[in-house]
Length: 175
Image 1 (cartoon, helix red, strand yellow):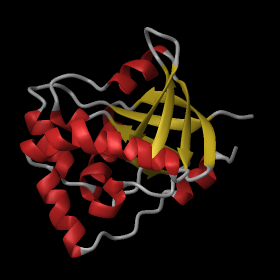
Image 2 (cartoon, helix red, strand yellow; image 1 turned 90 degrees about the vertical axis):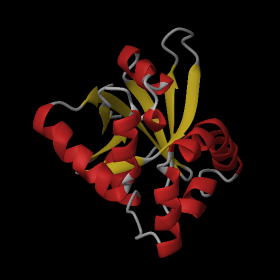
Image 3 (cartoon, helix red, strand yellow; image 1 turned 90 degrees about the horizontal axis):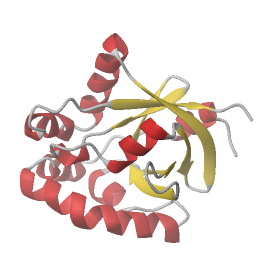
Image 4 (cartoon, helix red, strand yellow; image 1 turned 120 degrees about the vertical axis):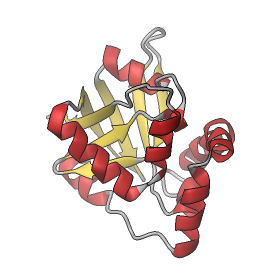
């Protein structure tokens, strides 16, 4: 395991190319969000596993790097791993529970509410983390950072049918 501080540093984002920014704009549309949620999301999970976290279709197409979050299922108690975009935030990272603008929260969000301890992995490195929901000014700062990286979040918020899109901060668990 590596420390969360070094994991956060590893999540440095390279500036996407003009082509990747165009793909990001397209990804924010309703049809592309559906495709991402139902197809690309599953492809990325497999690619990340097979490449030990080094490659994903999302990164290749959009320039946005993905991490793997392993939570404990809220109902089943079983481990659940999902590829997500994580944003550095000081010594922590945060996740946006947008679910591509769906009116429902993503399953991983419910899992973290019930079992806040999780594992975040990037490449072959992983770190045990504790999740907490961002509130107040901290939420707004994180939201602005997220939208600056990926403008699609703003479109997701508009489509979320009035649902508040949560942001979860992940802090390292001391080993």
